Length: 72
Image (cartoon, rainbow, N blue to C red; front, side, top):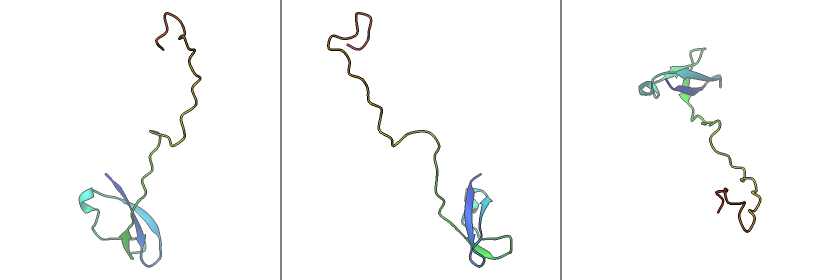
């Protein structure tokens, strides 16, 4: 079940509510009972790709590494 972030219009409290996607746009209130609006959440991904450049690779010898090497 997705987790949505909301911000209270009166006390500026930010809180999360776990609810079905079908109920994502339904009204909700903060712990004090004030009306709240849904925030646009920022998605963070862990792992996967990297924006860092790939490490340099040493050049192969001109004639290959030998008869059993797969580099040529």
